[in-house]
Structure formats: C-alpha cells, structure tokens
Amino acid sequence: MDHILIDGNSLTLEKFIDVTRNNKIVKLTSDSIEKVNKARALVDRYVEENKVVYGLTTGFGKFSDVSITGDQTKALQRNLIISHACGVGNPLDEEIVRGIMLLRANALAKGFSGIRLSTLNTLIDMLNKGVHPIVPEKGSLGSSGDLAPLAHMVLVMIGEGEAIYKGVRMPGKEAMAKAGIEPVELTSKEGLALINGTQVMTSVGAHTVYDAINLSKTADIASSLTAEALNGITDAYDEKVHLVRGQVGQIDTAKNLLNILEDSKNTTRQGELRVQDAYALRCVPQIHGASKDCFKFVKEKVEIELNAATDNPLIFVDEEQVISGGNFHGQPMALPFDFLGIGLSELANISERRLERLVNPALSNGLPAFLTENGGVNSGYMIVQYAAAALVSENKVLAHPASVDSIPSSANQEDHVSMGTIAARKAREILGNARKVIAMEIMAACQGIDIRGDKGLGAGSAEAYKIVREKVSKVEEDRIMYLDINTCEDIVKSNVLVEKVEEKIGTLL
Figure (tube, helix red, strand yellow):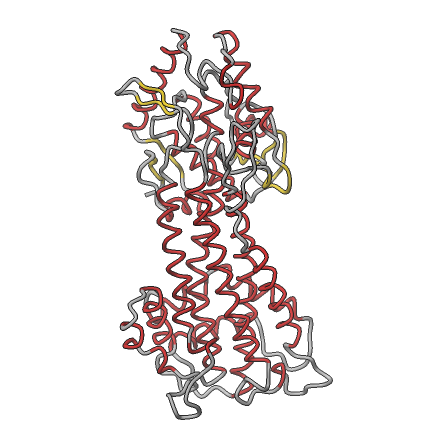
C-alpha cells in the first residue's frame, strides 16, 4: 500500500516509522471524518449557547475561571499558540517532527477533540507535502502535555514560525506558500486540541524504542564476533540453560547467539581451553535478554499511546458531554522512557566490558595488548576503549530517571508534571552513545579475529565480519581511529548488519 490510513486506533510502530522515515502518504478513514465532524458540531453548538466549558468558552490553566465571549474566540486561540511557543534549544530532527505531526493527526482523528476537519486536513497536508516545522527540543514539562513544542508546530499552521521545506529552513508562511497550503485561522477549541497532548515525547520515544530493538540484535552480533575473537565457550548458550529459567528475552538471545555462531571453528566447548568464560561473554543471554524484555514492554506502552486521545477537554458526542480530565499527563510514557534509557545503558555497559577483554592482554586469552602486533610504537585500540568507557559513564548519568522529578507550574494549578519529554530525549541520547560503543566493540572484535587467525567463522558472524571489512580494514599501523569509528557507527545505524545476517541465518529475535 502506498499510503497509511489513520483512524486513531490502528497505528503501529512499524507504520509510524513508515511515515516518518519512508515518507508514506497519510489519509483519514471515512469513519474518522464522520467522527471529527460530529464532535465539531457539538463544539459549535455549545459555543453558540455560551455554555461554560473549559477550553471552549474559558481561558486556560489558571485562567480557567475567565469567561471568553464569542467575539474573542479567534484571538484566544491565536494568543494560546503564540504565547505558548516558548521552546528553546536545537531543533528536533525532521523525522521526530514528522512523528509529532502524524501522532497529533492520529489523535485528532479519533473524534474526541472537537477540531474542524479543515484544520486537521491542513496538518495532514503539511505532513504529506513535507512542510516540517522547526520545533525546539527543550521546554516541555510533559504535562499539560507537550505544550511548548507543539505550539511551535502549530505556529507554521497559522503562517508563523519557521519550517524546513525541501531541505531549506525558511519562515513558516513561505514554506506553506511553496507547498501550496493555505494557513488556518484557528477558532474555538482548536488551539488547545492541537497543543494539549503527549505527541512530542511519544515521537521521540517511539523512534528510540524502534532503534533500540534493532540495536539489541546488533549487540548479539557484536558479542558473537567477540566470542569468535576470544574463543568463547558456546555451552553457556545451550537452550536447556535458558528454558529452565523461562525469561523470554534471555531465551531469544541465546537462540540468536547459537544461530549466529553456527559452524564456527573459532569458538570452543566447555573444558577445551577453559571451563568457563567471564560474565561479559557467559551472561550475554541474561543481560541482553533483560534489555530486550525492557524494549518489548516499552513498545507495548508506546503503541497504546500512538492511538491515544490525550488532549483536554474531551468531546463525547453520544453522551453530549465535554469532560475536563488529565489525559495530557505524560506519566504513562515517562516511566517507560526512563526504563528504556536503562535498558539501552546496559547494552553499552556489557559491550564496553567485552571491548576491555579484547584489548587487555590479561583478559584476552592470548591476543596482544590493545590489539596491535607492534605495541609501543603503536597504541592500537588503546584509546578506543577509553572513548567507550567515557560513553558508558556518560550514560550512567543520563540514565538517572527524569520521571521522579516534578515541579509545579501554572500558579500551582498544574502541581505535578511528568518530565516525560526529558525522559524520552535522554533515552535517545543514551541510544546514540550505546550505538557508538557497540560499533567500537565490532571493530575491535574483527581486529581480534584477524590477529588470532580465523579458523572458520560462524554462519552469521562471517556475514557480519565481511560487511565490516568492506569498509574498515585491519589496523596494521596506527592511524586516525575516529574515522573508522564513524564508519562502523554508520554501518550499525543503517541496520545492514542485522539485515544481512538475517538473510543468511533467518530472523533474529
């Protein structure tokens, strides 16, 4: 299918990524169009009747007791957007912004927000035509939703702010004109419907958990290459060991390792060279598996939130009720995203320990110090391990939970906030660090394999080794290492290792 239908109920993580990274076109279902129109009709009726309803005929937050007359409605909505656009820091990546737009459109498509169909279609047109608002990364408390960053998205909808269009940063009004989209004039409830929600934290976290799942498979490949270089003992990966514990991620990881290492002549059996390996090799199923279970949990929570109505108030057409609640509160996402950061940190922690075993002659089962055959004049992989150690130490700081913090806002009307957007951004930062560490381990493992002498790599590890060696050669004499690190990180980021290994041995779990 060349497009993705959205109805507020059926968006999956995979479809989400298809839109944000593969630029799939988005369309509303006919059922959603009907629901949106019905909810809007109820809003219009209540406004006509001057019914006192939060967000329709009142101010916002602490100003909820201030009545707004009909002739003030449009000014109220515009002022809401321009006053709330207080984001600071670097712009979020375009794919993250695309995710924000998609998620806001999907939430509105549920028909509980009271937005006009024409306004929703403007947002969808921007997404489909590639008008990507500049959304600063900082400034959200994660409740009442992602107010500040979402306001920056809406600025472009009303012909203000800035956007990226076809790779060029320009005023929002200009981007809309170039794309042939007419800016909107917001009316009752619409500003609030567009900025009151968890879409920023969810977009950041959704991309991060998608990448984390792939990185966990890459980490299995990395540890397998290290096992090849260190003559690792495969008995510890025997299925019987893991079935008697019953942890799913652990069982899956052990299967991956045995499949990747199948037919390896470099790995050993228990008692051949030594009785057991250190934990960084022996306990890979337990450690990687726990992170995989973490990512599975976070994905489940994310997929609920992808299809959630998170603004306030909510319009219940059948009951003719407008209820002011707290679905904008980011706590259901904040805790999982803190957990996500911890799961990613642990992938990097054990990877760095395997890297240390490769470069340390006291631990490497016969490899030369720092993986250089002419040590002294050459430093080899010495500082690669330093860099990895710095990254995992930084991750330990970043993994401190954001969700345990709160600070009152809006004159204490909003007296508990989630910090969920900070949790998501931290997890994404940890992901980047973890990816770099795993890339360094892969480089070092391939170097170790070359130095020790390859007796025959496993089915999957042979494929991974070949891909790396197409881009990064063995280090014979010292050279500028950051170039190799960057190249190997690009390989990891592209997910080509997972794709090619899966082509050879079947799906990695």
